[in-house]
Image (cartoon, rainbow, N blue to C red; front, side, top):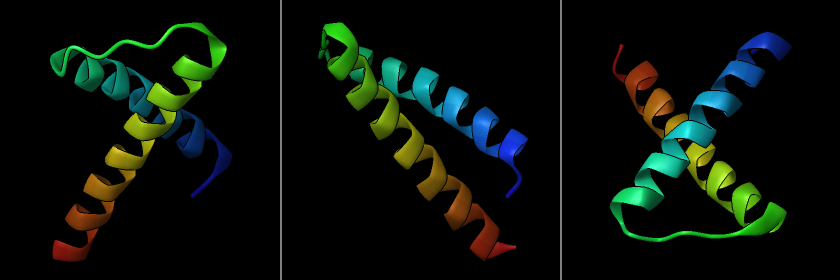
Amino acid sequence: MGMMINLVVGLIGAVLGGWLFGLLGLSFGGFVGTLIVASVGTIVLLLVVSAVRKKT
């Protein structure tokens, strides 16, 4: 994917991670915590996108 798509996926993944961790009642503080939440959200989003692309 192109750089712009990667940036968009990263941003959406960060929001998704914050939402998921909020649902679970988990919170992390500081830069490292935010980075972990954003990374987990992005990984989840990429797994979903990959699964959807395989079906089509």
